Image 1 (cartoon, rainbow, N blue to C red):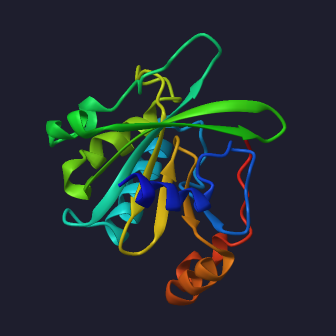
Image 2 (cartoon, rainbow, N blue to C red; image 1 turned 60 degrees about the horizontal axis):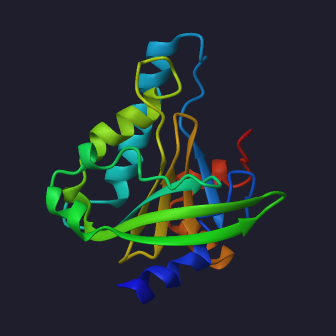
Length: 194
């Protein structure tokens, strides 16, 4: 599985938020006013849920990845993973890989990952908490979550309520996706504020 996982590092999904390349399609989750917090979070949640359910089913084979940033002298464990697993055996099959990235600043990332079925993840709860955690709902700080779709060769990255990145191997893969799903063309040039 390590080779399979390393092959997906061509996606560069471990880079910092400031790094957007041609192979990333960023889908904004809501255009509602953030001042109406409840409506805004609900809209973000429903849009994210729709996107996930459009491309993933319970039987989809994925690599589930949780990223944390490693500070000097502190080794982080994923803050939030066990509570989002329906199949608790995944905790015992977690692998760990450390990488380094320089994108204006040097950072070390720890990637916790496991191959599983999408249905093994309590994705509805995870998506809800990602939408809520920076909005004052009492959800503890979250990590970065990635769902690598092994059959379609793309990756969903969700960090919070603002957007979902759909990460492709190449810009050509992204363009093929946009031909197949033209409703996503409106996001082709969207780059989120970070």
